[in-house]
Length: 173
Image (cartoon, rainbow, N blue to C red; front, side, top):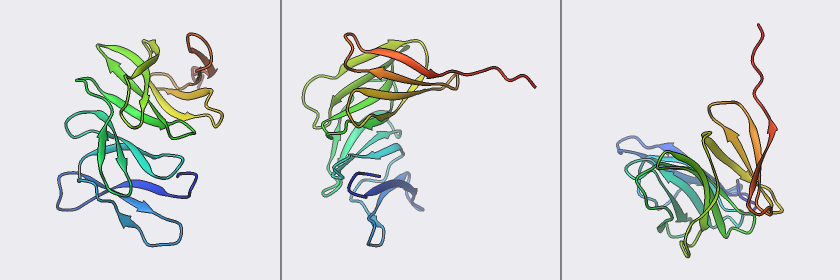
């Protein structure tokens, strides 16, 4: 849900080969967005409510930003590996996402308008997902896949550093 109250979610459309996105404003019936039906994952609305970042699972496994007014897509990533779990910066300028580039797990970011080169923020071996950006823009909240844990990536540190905030505990039952 954006700061403006817009909720975007992917719904299965019968008779198509993929999913369509629907916007659900707070005081109106759901509105189907002018977006080509495809297999989308992890749609997230920008804080300003104007765009949605999404992983296109159909063919590219890349991150796209879709204009919610026109349906115009802007591709942000261009590689053969999976890019996933986009998250918006509080000012709606950046999109951060997790990736598996050449077998190395990474967290990257790129300007939402597609300008400039993507920036690598963190590299490691653990499969992480980007969950959210803190409101002050300083941290990215991440979650582990192989292990159940949460972490904070400090973007103000040079270089950005990952700090675990919870760790998986073995079950003793």
